[in-house]
Image (cartoon, rainbow over all chains, first blue to last red; front, side, top):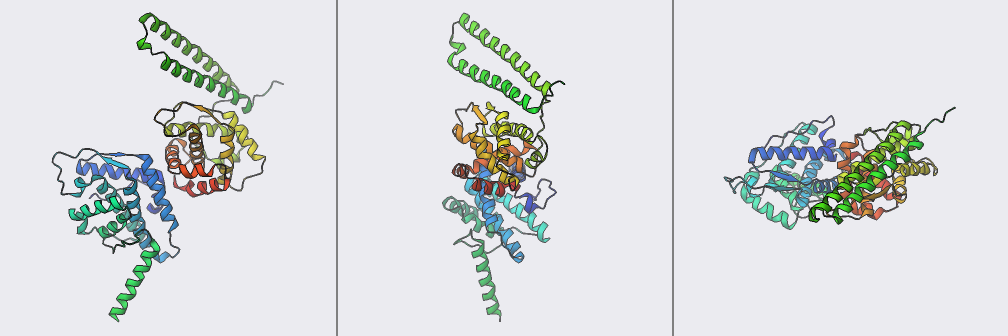
Length: 201
Length: 231
């Protein structure tokens, strides 16, 4: 997976990413990096990308928390939501695979899903680093093809599951029931914390 | 004292030159469709080809003369960097708005897949002036919401050649191009050449809401407010 290189901006990334033109440039740049690493070329549909962007923007704006202590959890959630909206509208189409492509690797098994996921993981890592001076990790499950079989199959049935898979890839506890609700995610995290405190008391 | 030309003298002339070009381009396309030169006997094809070339020359000359006359009255403003706030702030706001709107519509239509269109700068100018009679708008987004239905109803987009692949009617094209142009004039980046492709794609993403809003200024106002900082 490539390092997170994004286009220059004088604005914080959390602001720049909410501008369609920057979002598009950043996405296209990441696709070019995936192409350089895998040899798979992509065609980008700007209209579908704009549709995904508008959907994502509305969802994240609608669920923005008032409490600043919830910002980190919100950025994690917004990244998963971005993956959901990209995979739902799928604004890219992969070209032919290289002759020696290994289909047991995610980038060749599902090139479009892989490219969108890499973009969201890198964007999440860059924002978390900038906002919280913290680093993120990708779990071994990201490199396990069995997870990608399940990921692709589940997303085909219900795009919302992409949020849960994103959480799995960054090492968070996934919410599978209603993954697109930030409020529910917070409530569940609060209950888990209380249960843990009760057990340790 | 000689008559001092004003912008309003020149704008109808510019529109006339553009109308001439549009009518010719459209007529030429229709003739070409109706007269498949490759299927005609050689002598007839040659004659038809010469006639078309002759028409082309006459139209070019007429367009050149009309444009030159318009330019002599008022230098053409070809700047693509502008915002609704800047336009409304200055004297002669209606002419500055109309010139920017004209350029914006050209970029919007191109981004939506339409290369040949007839846009009336004169109508845009008159519509803007008329909108001021209803009092000052509370904000630039409120002004855009007021202008959008008025610009559409006044027929600022007179005509367009719709490609067969275009998946919308002329009415929807007008709505989306007008929305995209006004959104670009409201956005934080004032370079229309870079903002308009994004604004056109955003308008397409919002097409059902824009269609549902119709003349509802409050609904349009909300959309402009919601997206102006996200282009």
